[in-house]
Length: 155
Image (cartoon, rainbow, N blue to C red; front, top):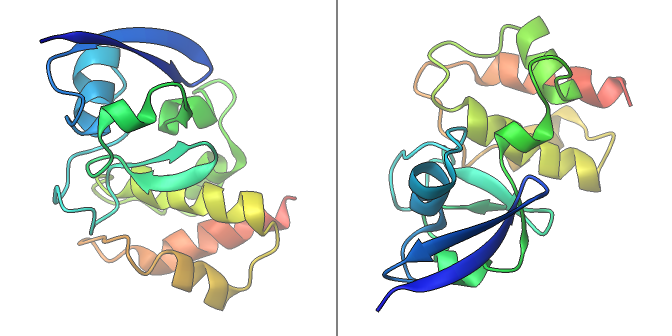
């Protein structure tokens, strides 16, 4: 039986109809809400491509049932900044050319934004530790770390 769920996505109230509240939040965000920042990567919560913030915490949206996200504040990559006014991490990723294919960028940025919210001045070692479970097959980790440190230096 279908049910309506109220979500708060990027500061916007959204109601979606789902047949199964155990459907991953990732699917609801991409297919029902229309945000495309979070990507399907591994489906196991191991790569980080699907990372979003739920109540300020970085979570793997492929593992969180949409029913558990109802009524909570969800922020996706689209909610961090806009093309006209990008978030400082988005600006730093551009400046450091921290993206090659771009598939991991959502997870790298969202995980890093959660880190900077808790620790505005992380060390290089802390950034690397925070991103240890975010996979990039292109090998841009050094530039990603540089981008996070650049954003942190901006305050």
